[in-house]
Length: 55
Ligand SMILES: [Zn+2]
Image (tube, rainbow, N blue to C red):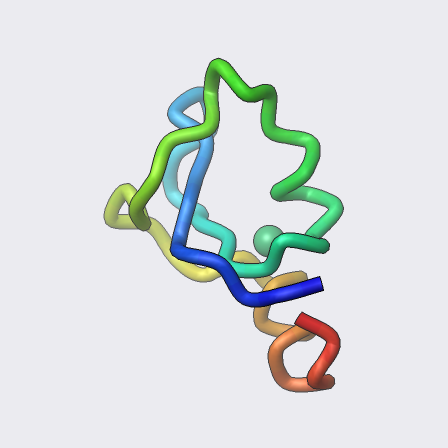
């Protein structure tokens, strides 16, 4: 588990991930995974992981 550079799904914009162990982030298909925030909001699970130190 680690904090990584922001990435998001181009198939589902509006949300980005920063935790390598975010289940939702890991569900993004490689072909849809793109770097950056995409102008979206931080994923709530990533936010939780970060605040609990589990990111
Ligand atoms: Zn996430």
